[in-house]
Image (cartoon, rainbow, N blue to C red; front, side, top):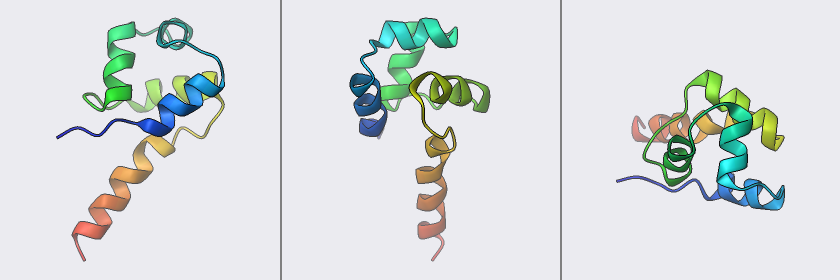
Length: 75
């Protein structure tokens, strides 16, 4: 099951970007960016940093939730 990255969608919309604009600015294809937003793909560190730079947030957010879920599942 995939989890849509609502926080990413919200930031993109608040900044006034389309998916196409973010993809172009980060030099990735729009379908790949869409798959990141919808949770079907995880960005590489390189791509996460590019997206975060364009949209103005800390790139580690992409990986924070997954890490916290792993910590919780081991308790």
